[in-house]
Length: 288
Image (cartoon, rainbow, N blue to C red):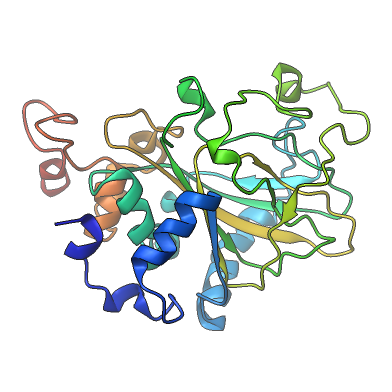
């Protein structure tokens, strides 16, 4: 029985637009991304914005070209408010994540990215590149992008290269390089401009799901409005996560989160016993 068959389809069917999950999965495998509009309600969006406000209000800008010098990034989000656990475990997102990565997957990263007016286009990258396995290959990650504000043609909507998850290229023009992590280095112009790029325009509350091998980048914000996304990213249970979740979310906070969120943070076992602590299942520590 497949992972999705084991889930209750009622939990996510209302967002499938009358199509069956298999059709959506074939499209995901073919194009490398999916977009579902208006998944979150206005009340959910308001709660998310309120939880983020104290952190975005600090207005800490990115440290380099990759983070974005005119962007705010908020990390360790499940330690900051339980409202973010609802995004991380959302049934629509998890249906595709688990279908690709298995039920023993982990949360690899979860961050908010707020682009201010004047932000430049990010370098092209794919989110599971840190595994350094030659392409073409199967994806070792799934990234989700929740639009907390409208993402538009002009305010920095994520740019994607449809079908690029199947490409053999480990490098393309304008791709991320060592200099993009420098505190002083700056890019001149937009070396990554491409005619085949598609902007993921979405109203607030929408969700984009992307393969870890899909080439994408944050767009330039040429508007007078901020663009806010939250991006939970997932990996197989046998790989190392990008953010060290056991330190990012202390046990005292993890203990208060829903069971599925705890499992995604690493309070789980990849069969037969990967992830044990002192010979025991890690979730037992939350009860100690």
